[in-house]
Length: 95
Image (spheres, rainbow, N blue to C red):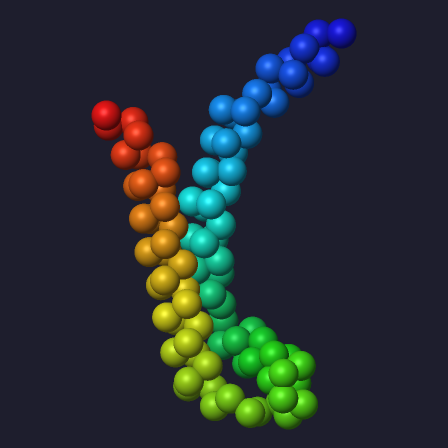
C-alpha cells in the first residue's frame, strides 16, 4: 500500500517535467562525448556501415570528412547540452 502511495507521489506533473528537462540536458552531451571519444577503428566501422546503408558502398564518404563531421556534431552536442542546462535548469534557480 505504501509503495503505491510513493509511486503516486513520484508521478506528479512537476517531477515528470523535471525528468524530461534533465533528459533534454544530458542526452546531447552524452552523444557528444561518445562521438568525441570514439576510437579511430570504431569511427571507420561506423562510417563503413553508414555508407553501406545509405549508398551501398563502404567508402562513399572520405574518412577525414567523416571524422570532421563527427567532431563538429560532438561539439554541437556538448554546446546544446550546456545551453539547455543553463536555460532549463540553472536559470530558473537564479531568480
